[in-house]
Length: 357
Image (cartoon, rainbow, N blue to C red; front, side, top):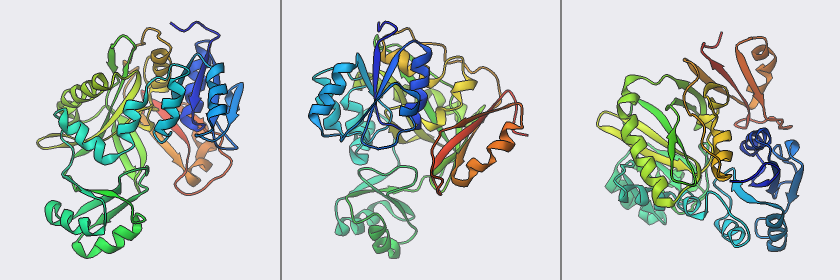
């Protein structure tokens, strides 16, 4: 059990790191941010910040020497960075989940091997393979780069085979996976936290609505179609966490379909669809992640009150903050990012026990 006053290192300097740092401070911990970026909204709320490349081993070793445990805030931290640090300090979660989540093809095969059901998929290592994949999967379909890409990036829709060339060019001609479209009622997420002792707790599953590939809203309670499939989706995520020896918050995104939940993807970290837990749950995903990596007892994941609505403030949406603050029931989170641009997550707003005015 990590005593208060210890230092938790966080790889990555974005808003998830910022909210993790705030949760750590509330439990009496110091936080050290490590990220290549010159500016870091996470570092703004911490005492220590190392700006260095992911492969700068001397700087990584110096960072590790200041930390009692290290975690990460996004899934594109290089696996080699985590492996190097693991030779100097405990890293929770470790490299296993990160390595799987960074490769969509590996992830789908891994989940299928555990009994999960991803959307129909086929590997597309080159342009010629795309034609074969379209014959196998059919259209419409979506082409996604195997590595990198999030919030709709690295993806292209293929409505007919005639779209193949444009889609291949659209993803930069990188190795990809072709996914068949899924006929679903709702998108929902399963967010769990797993402690060092293997205890697993789940938050209630929100229904997620995306706009342009970016999460727009997460709401509770979910409709019956999601509730009916929540237990099956939870069982899969618990199996994934156990298989990985995972410690911390792990998220899975699912489609609620007529014949059961279809796995979309996982994120080995705290997740945008769990931001509602800051005010809407007894203990948030951020605090419970810190509790888990520090070896503390996990807190209650119960929902505080219903309904709950979390609305992302994307791009120019951040300009609505004064109006949101005029709503006494609204909890506003501004991430402190200086540059406003389309598609950039700049904050979020949450209502608990009531709906937006």
